[in-house]
Image (cartoon, rainbow over all chains, first blue to last red; front, side):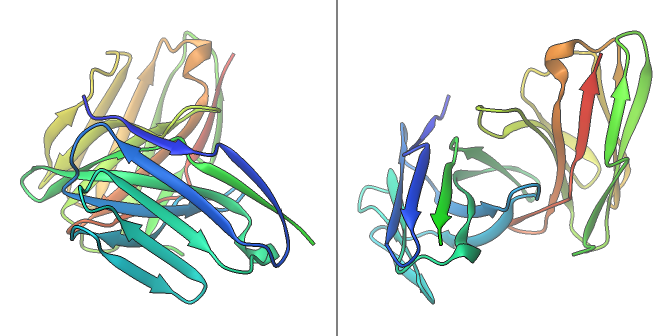
Length: 114
Length: 110
């Protein structure tokens, strides 16, 4: 079955430093989604990438989808303490009748040192 | 956020108990999902319902039994669980691609 690998598992950065997490799939993806889960919280949708080579930005966050649609990355510029949490990528595939199956990576837990 | 609610938020149960988790979505979505989140493991999809019909069951043990009486409600019935079933159980709903998660039920099996 489809597997989604995500690295690194943990990342500690000084506030103001940049942060990047990488996601790789064993198969070509229909799309990839990114979620953020704050400590003690639940995953919250950030963005979806669909097209090969797509790049999207949300303020200090930059998301990329690889040309082969098998890898993706999330880059945060000048991290802030509010960025703390676990970032998950998820490969999406339709599962019929309007539903969507996501295969999640293990996530990258980001700690920001003030 | 109150789009997807889950009750109870915390549950402690013995291995011989029977309990149910409840999820309700107020977003008008047509698909609902149960996930299991354990420490050091990826989010695991357990069940998918679309238009109240189960479309996916990822080889989940029969001690977990889902029920979807309508498009807004989803239940997970639990019986004779094992300690390794202790985890955060998350419900989610979707209309198209992005999924909206509830706050989860933290389950401890003793």
